[in-house]
Length: 193
Image: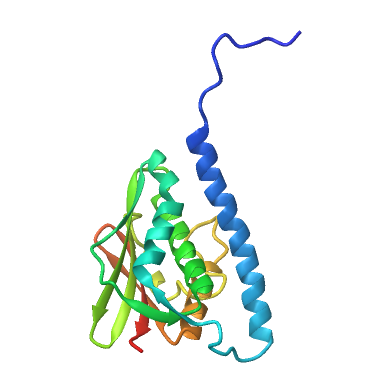
């Protein structure tokens, strides 16, 4: 007869919640890569799927989706943001932001940390900012972050940020990266339209 432990098994709900987020992210990543490459082969894309999207609502949705990470000490917060709207494919925008969140969480690693999301309006542009406390990247690597198959981590595929760049180009915007304070800051810049 098997030994029955005297104490109940430990509660792994936090670990299971984080594993669920990671598995969902991996599945979305694979599907995103396949769809993006399929669409790239099919010729130029029209703006037929672009909608007017309220950025604050998207950030709130993603913050709630990743709230389980707080159980391991990673806070995902929204800075006081401009209530802005941009014309973009909402599905692809969410994918781009999920890639950025997942990269930030990987950069933070096993320690406690923070990812700050925000929206800024400067001049003729609306910018979504994703800033983490993961330590940043060496200055020499900043220019290469958006190259396909380039990764600063051993476990990265190097496709996430390349996909983010492609999504932003299709939305008529661009993406920027810089080291800021305690980590990396990625800026999704949309032309005001």
